[in-house]
Amino acid sequence: MKKLFLLGLTLILFFNCEKPKQRYFSESPEISSMKASITEYNNGDWESWRTHFADTAKLYINSLKSISTSDLENAQKEMLLSFSTYGFQDKGSFVEMVIDSTEKTWVNYWANWHGTLKDNGKEIDVPVHITAQYIDGKVVKMFDYYDSNPITVALAEIEAINALPVDEKAMMDKLDSYISEFFNKRDNTVLSNILTDNYIRYMNREKVASNPKELVASLDVFFTGFPDLKISILHKSIKDNNVFLHWGFEGTNTGEFAGYPASGKKAKTEGLSRLHFNGEGKIDIENVYFDQLDLMQQLGITLAPPAP
Image 1 (spheres, rainbow, N blue to C red):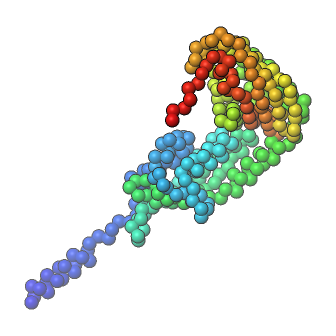
Image 2 (image 1 turned 90 degrees about the vertical axis):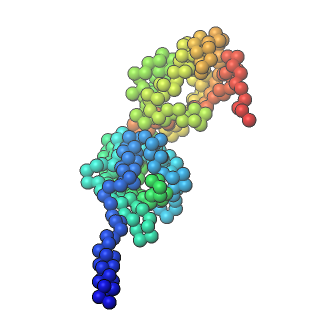
Image 3 (image 1 turned 135 degrees about the vertical axis):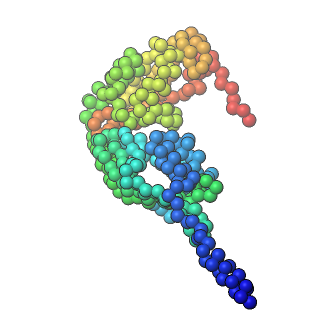
């Protein structure tokens, strides 16, 4: 009987001394994943940032309605065009991982988001709390909480300034320089006085440039293919801060164009453009439309139909 008593006592002591399951962590693969995603966000490395999320991840950004990872990426890209610098700051940040009572794994992250606006140099600070559920090393659900008001107000102020009427003569002077000096003489140095730093260009609804440097790069195919390219203004009209152009293009294809060898043929086409001037009298958005197929056909280029 005494032996049974001692055996029972030993079992009780063993189970009472068993360590409880660890539910709080300051280091883990999930925490490393969260930190890596923050660094990739700060660096604009969206391709790597995406890898931390499950394909079906649901993200709740200050809302009870979820969005997808691609929705968040596109929204952030659009907003960040207005900032010269941005990112989460290491100083004062904190990250932890917990396993809740239902055995779900959560990573919590607190930090200050800091950004500088391109248009006026204003600096914005926004405290942020992110909590994300991980399964098999991937985020399947994320809640992101922050006060969006400082960003919303700052962007609204810029929009209001950009909506202020601009002197029409000043607009026409900038436009004339844009066509005659940049397009027809290839003088890139004039662009700093004509375009905003966050200038955006769409060609046939496709975004081809998000700043003046990208504009120059996107037009290289035309400048190389048509060294004597000339743009002429056929008609123009002004409405508020918008200039609407009917323009003509002509040139001789003596250089490689879009991967095709020089044809030696002359080409002409026409197009329409809308250029918006901000409150400081610089172009910030340009929409261009023209018949690309007609231009290619004039050069004798036949485009193969898409594969079925």
